[in-house]
Length: 397
Ligand SMILES: *Cc1c(COP(=O)(O)O)cnc(C)c1O
Image (cartoon, rainbow, N blue to C red; front, side, top):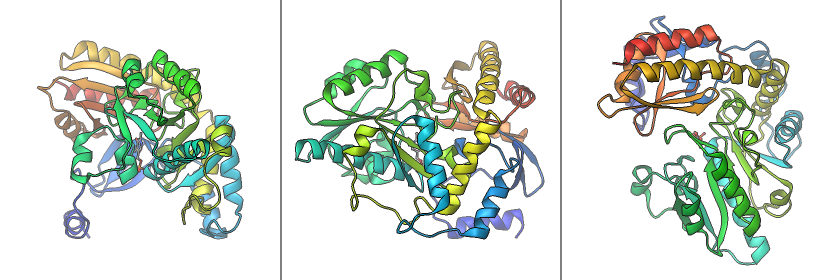
């Protein structure tokens, strides 16, 4: 199939839920992708914050190939080697207690919500609990995850959603307090809002939420699906806040391209929530996916990927501050580490900039509120940052 045929065949047979960019990406190398016309792109999208290690990082493919030669799938009816390895590495990286592996971010959110409800049910002996989520949040597209996603455009066609969800304003502790009732069992938020436009939680806000959760025995769920795995300059973003969640969700970069997610519970949540029979998944904890998670942690540790992200993240931040000062159409620069957003004025639609950048060989994406989102592989160099910023400088009016 040539490029035109690939696009036409895709549109003919794949349900049209995405307006795809008009390129066909065929292979990746390092921090670059190549399309079917052999055009090269510097990748500051990383498959939406997935490819933390870039493409073909030494050791990654080899580990997957070795696992394929052993066994790809066995089911959760049996023990398997990579599951034990991956779970130990993930749990130890958080200082928490137990992990449950899923196939996606949304599925991790579903599990976290169920665990929080079960915790409150075990404690109170009744169900009917409430969850507080944040406006402009994003937690996924399944009905449960959508129910805690504070975006009516995504929610409205699918009502009625899961009940018992109230929304508060991110970084506004009074609005959270106002939403709390005796029925509140959980507060869920991203540590850094991603799709909503790259908004980090304020330290005082997250600490105050943690304090209320402690006081009222409410489960704090931090969604680190996008901001976790080193992206903000610490392995988990919450590690920069002096708070710990009761339940954390992860996915995206967890498998660096292999579809996998997880929710991780602290001892309290693990001991008093989901029990045998309460939750399950056929593929979750699958040996191939677990081999990916396991080698990702090994490579992160061996090569100080998080330290690298922190360092290059500061460099990128300084460059973006310059861009912000230079171009009047950039209202604000926000972010942490290698999770960055440039909010543009309404006169400059972010989609136009994304297109211009792509034509010039740079892949970037957008986020809510007219924000240009930069979520490159964590292994980019300062020279890659220079190349990216040079193109942005030319694209922005
Ligand atoms: C992407 C994302 C999700 C959903 O993950 P999927 O794997 O697409 O289901 C949930 N929460 C956050 C913060 C995300 O960025």
